[in-house]
Length: 575
Image (cartoon, rainbow, N blue to C red; front, top):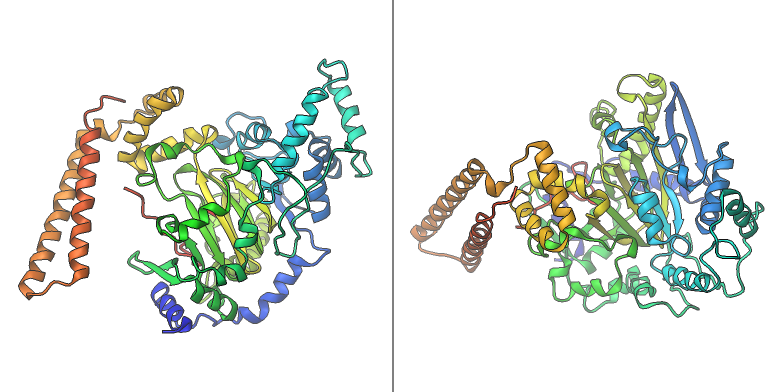
């Protein structure tokens, strides 16, 4: 079979009820929408909020956003002046009314996402000022080694003092403001040291460029992906072009795979309204495709990975390689198990929309806004449902489900990394053909939320995780036990009722397997595939029994299959 027959078969299995994937003719109308986002005069950052019963809209140009990111604190103060309020980095947070997530209150006039630059913002600043406050961010210049420039400048700064006064003493707010005004004048022209050699920016037209001119520190070296993940490079790669990658699931949850070379032909030739989308979480298990791991480095903003304690085989899926045709995307969702996520775009342009956790699910999903016969894929969500949602919110005047309604839209360009905090609703649309990488993670900043979700959603894994935490991070283990005590939660290994349910379920599964095997024997023939399935099932059962036996002896207080209907309305992805 050729590429068309293979992708047609995948589409038929992925959405069997959809007979015509091009029924709305979006292939012809989408270019106008994409052009409106990519036009030089377009403002890629915009917000829509209901304040005092009135709709308030604002936007930020690409030039201003990048200037703010590069200038750091002074730039954010400049942004505050543009919005009519005196605001520093310390004001870029939730309203000060207790626990932000519980209260469901955000902003106080703050615009999301925060636009940062890896050449300026340190991991410590990110963790304390943004991740700890669950503020979405767009971080520029990670793939092209921006962190190396930041570290070089920090080393030079350490030689000349730590950014305090000339005599080494701490500066008060007035002195600090004068210093910032001297370094970052109001005319936007930064005065920098003579040793400052900026890395070249990644162009905004979706084409990556390799960074040069800086002897990058090893962990901040430019990603090989900048060269290896272009569409032409992927199509010609002898190690990747023949690898089958996941592009969807059938109605039974079975994985649909297409060879990369066939998918790339489909990508450039299809006229589907919402095309298939490669969203592969198991590429690291393929001896050839796992070479992709050598092409990027986890940014140091997100290098704390607490789920890694349980091992690669037991932890939930968390890492995805993405290849998306224009018009494909992921519909609105929240990332699983309370995790946060980062998404780095290497090739192309994406459009995002974010909703804070306090916006009701029924509103975010656009229920009662889809007309009979209309589809609800990502492209329909952005071009049709979202505009209707804003009009409904404005008409409601901040009453009912639309009270305190907020949504934030922005365009992600190649070379930019998006950080999505736990609990934030988000949807993504590929404006052009795209290639990227995304990972979900658990750190100290979101541990409480992740622990509560994991102990109930992945009960047996949570027992193993708690034991590892006691060994490596006793303070987090104590925190998990405090949360259990406060919530009256009983761990699976201490709950005899839950264990009995598991044993009954396991015995029923074994009974069904034996009946299936006897049926094959009565037929007198067993295929190699069936024998392999039996062997895998027995191996899996033994592994579960071993894990459970090891955990039940504790006295403390399997890899998850994730339903990712790529490009469809039922998709729940990490993007």
